[in-house]
Length: 385
Image 1 (cartoon, rainbow, N blue to C red):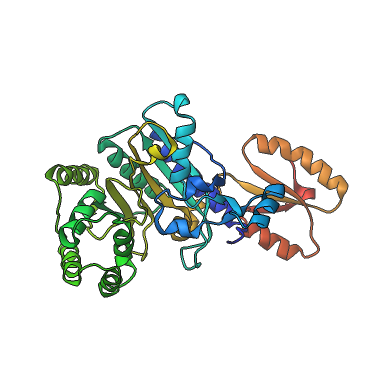
Image 2 (spheres, one colour):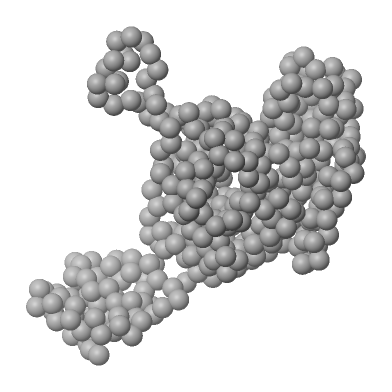
């Protein structure tokens, strides 16, 4: 976890606003959900490895004392590890108040207790869009289109959408390894193909009791980009690809794309960039999640931008202050009060005016203000309307 210090805070605000402006133009409505969810919501949500990384929150007061005495379960809540599971709970709770189909944008922090590394923090921000109630590939196409447009709006070009389908992936796995009651462990291993060698993945699958020859055939089929599965699923995937390419978006089928979360039920996708070893965004269809909350089965599909990652990649010079920013330095209380009164009129005309007391080290103060984007630092004596 980390602090965000100026001017990075302003940069992040501008990036978020540009992304959300694109999503608003598509009709996505902004929601907010609590950072904490009941553990029963988070655990068993098919969140893959993320469920092992939940920051659990202890029960409080007398309830905690009672559990300590009897050696029971100490935690009853947890910090959300993504925004998809809270969204499903949100839709189930507010179903009667939501229009269908429902398009939603959700930008907020999430937490995972994993080892920090480049591009990964224990607290980080996700920027999601989801469509609830649309079963056709129109949802996948719009989500991918809006996400690519949002990335372009913040100056990130040259991205490629990688496509796959969980149903094709399952068909390929069972074709080579036999029918599986619990395929999630295989998917989790295969999801590491972009992070480690195929030999390491093969060894992990072999340790899981799978036939070595079958594992080798499976990985070879991935390397050859072979499609195995019902023709209608292949046709839908091809339809998504053609529609995106028709809009000038670079697309490729990637059989090694897995997505580590077990809740995906159909098409899955990620956005890659040639300058990065990891994806900038990812998502897919997860039609089965509403059943966990006793709500009617609804088609759901979403795409999430890794906000921290795009903040690293953007050209910061393209996010200079859109409005003029000036600072006024004052020597005493009288000058402060006079300049505060004058500044109001300038602010009404759209100028950012920061009235501050003059520091002892005038040069450092000026350098600091200029670093924060102030184009002009003037003395109170010369400040006027």
